[in-house]
Image 1 (tube, rainbow, N blue to C red):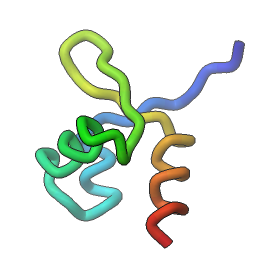
Image 2 (image 1 turned 90 degrees about the vertical axis):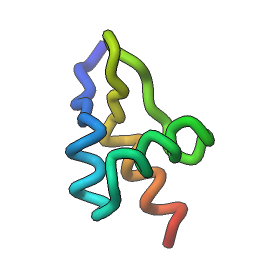
Image 3 (image 1 turned 30 degrees about the vertical axis):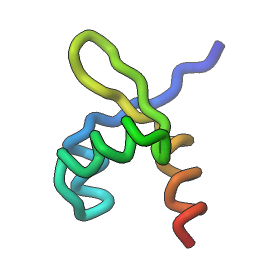
Image 4 (image 1 turned 135 degrees about the vertical axis):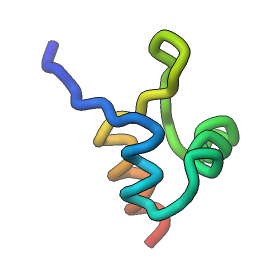
Length: 56
């Protein structure tokens, strides 16, 4: 099984130019796929790419 690069909420927020709160809302609503590792959300690069492609 290959390793997938995971991004933090802060990294995704900076990339999308939105707040960290908005990224968490997108995850909770199901628009952006994320997972909880420990106490924090992590988002895979593939999920972020899928999200941005759908937005176009």
